[in-house]
Image (cartoon, rainbow, N blue to C red; front, side, top):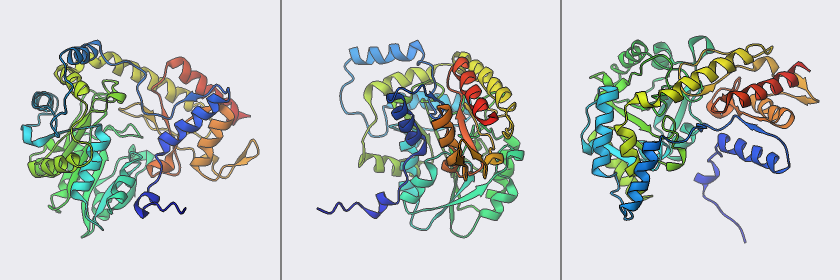
Length: 396
């Protein structure tokens, strides 16, 4: 029998972050002591008040199907969060709750991208952006940014990338994988370019909003002339350490939110009932209640930068948010290490896994072939051991 899959699925790449996690798990099953620095998953537990809310929801028998776009009182809590943290005013019809921010992004793409539409992606970008766009027959337009500019797109680069086919700009701040945070002035400069192109919409992925070391987060939708053109994506996976709970949400113009609800209604319907009740508690919490996590992530960032910068050939910027470093390792491309010729960042990342037993992710997955992503969502002891292994491998 011939197994004929669709052209659409055949063209879809496997998530490189998940693929590396699988390879690391296979080595562990062979008895190897692999330190995983590939997944973007906090090593904390959710706050107790979140878990208590979930237990209460179970005891209160929240078992039935949920509204496609989310419980009304959860939407109210999200509205309060947007106003408190971002000075953004939304109503219920502008909020859509989904099974994770990844589904929020997939909904947006399905609702807004037509065949041939171009979507500008500042590189590096989160690993799934490009394939989500391609899956919906859009055309990713990659704009390479530089370590010297903290991997941020400049207004001049944005203007140059725009064509008559440009439909959207997608970016994250704080950025996965670079940890870069766009300031208010930097976002204003990008918004000024977009004012000359009123038919271009923006997806602002702010899932790492609270993991921020510069003392403040600014949303591009806060500019009055960008509010009606911006879809703000957020969720609880990162700052609240709720990756497995699978709740994300958007704040968007009404017509976009309705279209996303329509799409979601045909795919998954409403998100998990118990998780939604727990997220109400998360949204009501003051961001200061998460400070213990942020403080620890900053200590780890500083540790990782210190250790990496002591290794010949690693070039890093100073990430201002999230929990990643994105070092340039182009120094090693073309070299032979342990009998293996390094022709790409993928080769380098695989070398670290097979020889040092440290799992990272190739920068090629994020649109940058000169870098690798290292997650510091691990203990300081694990991070120190991992980078010592890398240093020993490369110095030998």
